[in-house]
Each structure stands twice: as C-alpha cells, then as structure tokens.
Image (tube, rainbow, N blue to C red; front, side, top):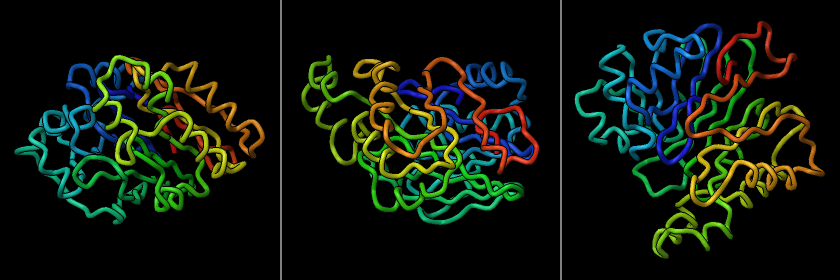
Length: 266
C-alpha cells in the first residue's frame, strides 16, 4: 500500500516479477519517492488499473503513464477523466477480466457515485493466490461478496466511524453523501461483511481509505477486531495510512512458492 485516503490512493501488486499499480492518486514526484523507498523503479511497472475517475485515484495517472511508459486500464466512464486526456487507455467494461502475462484481473462493478467504478480481484497465474481490492463502495453488493470468496489478501474500505461522521466537521449534505449506498463503507459495515465472509485462508485484511476527519486507525482496527472476534479469520488486520507505505502483504506459504519483496506480492 503506497498510501490510501482522500488525499491519494495507490497500491503496488507484484506477481513473479511483474508489477501493476492500482490507482495513481499522487503526483509523480510523491509516487516515485514512495516506490523507490521500497526499491521499485517506476519504469518497472507494466500498467496502472484505475478504479474510478475521482481525483484521489486518478490525479497522477496520465502524467505517470507518459513519463514512465505505463499502459492505463480503465472503464469507458473512467477513461473520460480529464487527468487521462492524451493517455493511451485500454478500456474494459465492468465485469470483464483483464489478462496480463503473470496475472489475471477480474473486474467488478462497485456502488459509488462515480462513472463506471470498479473493484478488482487479482490472481497469480503461477500460484493461484488471490487479492481482492474494494474501496470507495457505499455498500457491499452481492457481486462484491461473490468476488471476495477464497481470497488470500483483501483490501477493504473502512472509511468512517458512524458517530464521528455525525459529530464531525462535515455539513449535513456531505455526511449524507458519505453514508449513502453509493458513498463510502463505514467501519461497522466493513466489519459486518468481513465477519460473514472471511475464510480461514485469508492471510491479510487491509483497511483502506480511512477518513482523516471521521475515523482513526485505532478506531477502525478496534471495530474490525471486535467484528472478527468469533470468526474463522486467523490472519492479520492492518490499517493503511495516507502518507506512509504499508506492507508487504503476502499470501500464505501454501500458495506462495517463492516469496517476493513488494506490496501485495502474489
């Protein structure tokens, strides 16, 4: 996790030496610095998958693609983002699977106030390890729940604490937008979904897109740990930070034949 929150999002995925980025909500200087802090040159990334067109997910994608020769992968709706103007965008419809030499990326439509937003499940071709990435979702749809079966790693939104949102600094209209069915997933709803869906094989649950004003890492972690108390989950729970790299997150030894070094390594 290269950073997650309302000021920017980016996730690095590696399978057998092949690298993809999911979202690029940081400028090229910030992104390059975070990548190099974990020994990754930006030019080594094969492509960037975009979940949706909001600035904190796409802000640096067009400039990064031009600077480092990345391919951009996005839905037709997301491809209309001004930040992607002039970039070569490989378009896919929600529900399609995007094929790469070392991994496959299954896409799932997500409930968010964006134009054709999606989440991803990335599968390693060599090991079968699976990572699900679902954030900026107002609720967990049936399609998302189905996509999250039998994962090794799950990145799941845990955006806000309900009470902190109600008593926080945002005006009522913005509170309503955040809490609605096409807004952002609360700590409580993330916990309800995780408790009912996680399997014993899930190694890592990473809480993403925490609000800086209506949440806190200890609040989100406490809520999730309470929710998982009597579940089958035996892995680790981590709250991703806005301004720090978190990880690496690896699949279990039964899946990973040769451990690698980078975030969400499959």
